Amino acid sequence: MRERFAGRAPGGGVPPLILVGFSFGGPSAWAAAAAMARAGEPPCGVVALAGSGRGGAAFEREDLDTLGCIEACANSGVRTLLLHGTNDKNVDVNFAHHCFHFGRDVCSTADAVNAGAKIALVVLAGSPHMLDVVRCAAYTLLKSWVLSCLVDGGSGVSLRCDSSPRKRERSASLASGGTTLDSLEASAAWLPHQEAAGAAAAVLVRGSGGPSTLRIQPYKAPAVSAEDLRIGRAKGYSEKGLDNLL
Image (cartoon, rainbow, N blue to C red; front, side, top):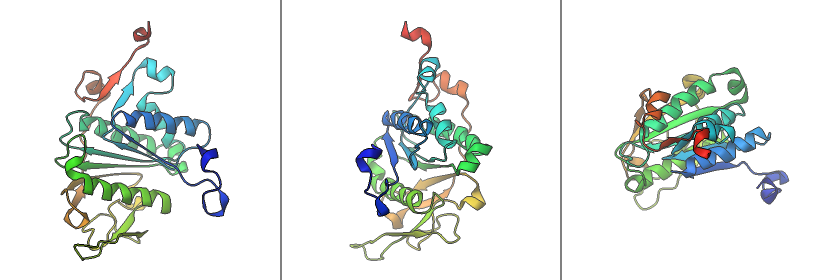
């Protein structure tokens, strides 16, 4: 992939790469990103949109277990965005909660801190698995994170919105000091400033329309244990042991 895009970045280099996976594509994106990280060429970021997860000895043996991939990416400085809806009936939001807590702990280790790893959790109130009822909100937040990842190394961007209902031109610029999104209309950063919030940030988003309708507040993700995942309290996560391969 890097060979395919070689020379397309300013100066002739390889442009930054962000991998995005939806649902089962989540663990696939993690697996690809981790493989790149272990090869010494990590992507800039990984996005899991309502992403599911895989675990167990069989996946671990092949370096495909989701949590192991998250750890490999964090240790290589890869930025992470977990975007999930509260009404997801296909992949329980509790799996995103578990990944966030796991990623936050990994991002606090010396290797990840030195590499600059960061993780963000965005929970969309009332959203089902397909994100269809909140597509505008999901797009706005995803775009904001991608731009911050590419332009500012993941510390947050501002979105400037035209007040005209027919024409809202959004331009990304570095956030100079704000730490939360009080109003996208007033041009504030939705991702907490890393010096203030550390390497992990979580927010709850209410609203399904354009940027001016969104209300974003700090979010305390519930703790979900690995045992909770194993006994099926988080739909969308599955384990496979070595005996399953026989």
